[in-house]
Length: 84
Image (cartoon, rainbow, N blue to C red; front, side, top):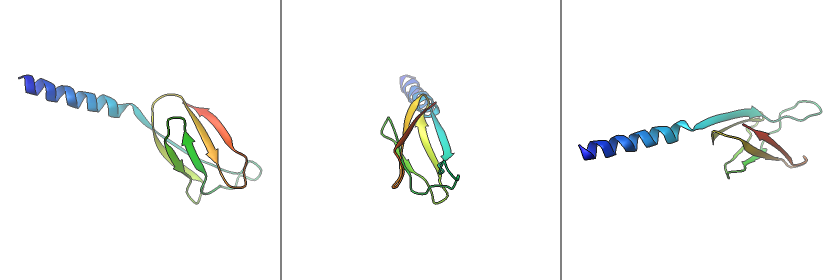
């Protein structure tokens, strides 16, 4: 019985830990003419990183909550934003 309860607690903890993440998707484009910007480096305040595809799209798995996003691309000014 004790082993069953321990196993059940482990699975419940895994379920709740897994349930506290979400997916952030978006696109990065030039502000002047709205063309997509490929290979933009995206960093979150928690250390998670990603980059945009050739068509400026990105997708990141993040913990639920408020995060600071930092965008870097060659030839563009550094940009940051808050998201939740």
